[in-house]
Length: 302
Image 1 (tube, rainbow, N blue to C red):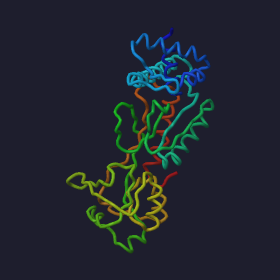
Image 2 (cartoon, rainbow, N blue to C red):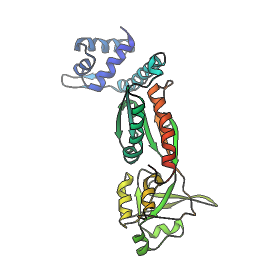
Image 3 (cartoon, rainbow, N blue to C red):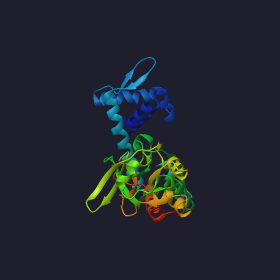
Image 4 (cartoon, one colour):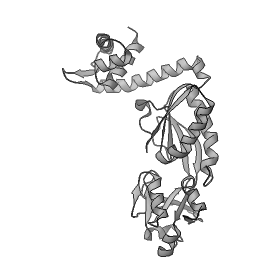
C-alpha cells in the first residue's frame, strides 16, 4: 500500500472520529479505510487507535503521529504546487485568521481588493483573538498583533502601529490629566487583554522602558468595548492609532502622555513552518504588507 495514501486515510479517520466518517470523506469503503490503518499499525509496530464497539480514540503514539502526518501531507502538497501552475497563479481556497477588530476592518478591506485581482481564488476568514492551531485548523495565514510566542511558525512583519494613551474630554474634566505614567495608578485604565503584558502599560524615558500596573472599571479581550467605554468617559485606554485615530480627529478622545513613548504594536503574518509557500499565500502576504503598512501606521486612515 502507498504510505502517503495510508497517512491521509489515518488523518481523515482521526479527524472524523470514526472509520466510517473518514472513509466517507475520502469516498472509499469503511473496509478499505480499516485496511489502510491496519497497514500503518503493522509498519509502525504500534496501535494508533483505541477501538471499542462504541468509540474510537487516538493512543498517545497516535496523537503524536497525527501531528507529524499533517505536517508531512502539507509539505507534499506544497512541493507538488511548486512544480505546477498553482505555484505561479493564486487559486483555490485561502483560509485566513485575524483578530476581530483589525480583521473586520483593515484585513477585510484588503481581502476584498485582493479578490478583485485574483478571480480564481476564494477566501475563508476566521475572526478570533488568537491565531489558533494553524495546521489543525487548516489556516494558511494568521494575522497576529504584538509579540510572537510560537517559535515553530514562520512570520513576516507587515506593519507597526503606535500605541497612544487617550481619554474623553469629559473624563479629564472630572478626573484631571495624568502628567507622568506613574499618575495612571490613580486613574481608571481600561485594559485590552490582547495587548501584552496584561494589565501593564509600557513607557520609555531616558532610563529605558518601565511597566506601569494599571486597573480600571472595564477590561476586554478586544479593543472596541473599551474604546467605546473611553468615549463615554469611563477611563483611559492604550490602543493603536489605527483604532482610535478617527475618534481623536473628531475630538471624542484626547491623547495624553505624549512625551512618553510606548513600544509599537507590530502586525505579523504567521504561517506554518514549511519549506514551500504556495502562490496564494505568498501573493497575499506581499499584497497585504503593501496595502496595510500605510493604513495602520498613520492615525485614522481608511
